[in-house]
Length: 76
Image 1: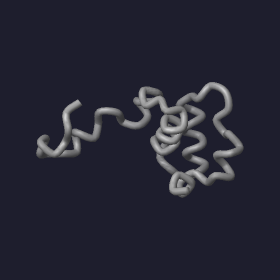
Image 2: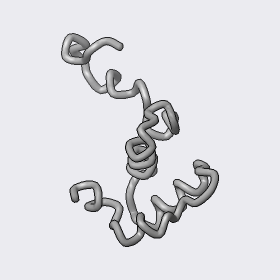
Image 3: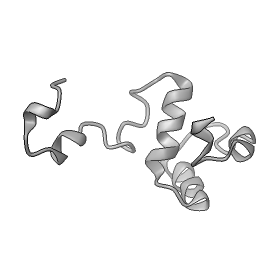
Image 4: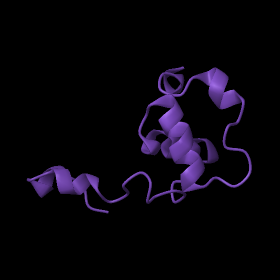
């Protein structure tokens, strides 16, 4: 599965973020896997189907800043 490309299934299935999911736990796992913490946070958000969760870690609202032509970026 594509989602296993950056976070190996073997590691994710061991549930390395048991209990309370904190920014520190996410950052530690991201460092171990050598990926950005937003990758881990995004996976958690997707699996829990809660896209409000961990929004500070995934740069919520930051994409628009990368476009000079705001007509290319949909409004929220």
